[in-house]
Length: 251
Image (cartoon, rainbow, N blue to C red; front, side, top):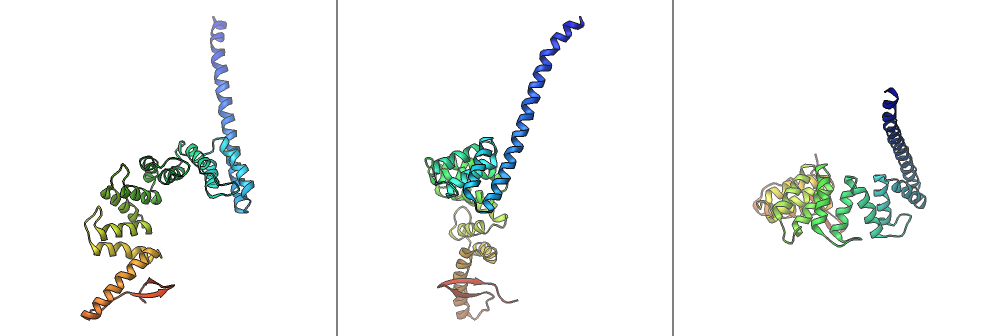
């Protein structure tokens, strides 16, 4: 009776051993891929792009999502390899399927612009959304842009404004600028020049040139109006390379 039990248990023990062996091999391969990625980053820092690509390829073949993303960037930016949008897109897709948020943003970028794949705004939005949940301001800006153009054919300014508000809440200069445009033009939100100025000003203070230029234009208008009415004004502008730039008042 004891022998019969032993015979029944042996296949189960053998299967468990095989599973543990596969798990161990997977762990070892994962560690090797991570080390290859570290070495690749070091070569990139030393401006050895060709050597970096070789290491990234090996790590990517082992399924490392960061390496797949980095390899896609190499193909996109022509770093150590010839520029190839299709190969870049394929690398990004491999990493995106593993839930890599940065790569999902890259896939969205490629779908939005038609790099290496047919232009598809709806697919771009699909890949951008997971990164939004992780608080990625760049993706929020991208989605605002997509909805402003029309994800499914017609513009949705309210949805675009929603993502601009989310980005602006993160103190992102581009988001502030875009939300200022929405308020200025009344796109997706109530038209309000005062609200527009409230959005342009913080971004200008962060050094964003677009916001500085627009705020300078507003300031020049204010200066002219105040010159006529005699009211004081608290901001100043200066000219740099033929362009009006916003300057903070002296404290």
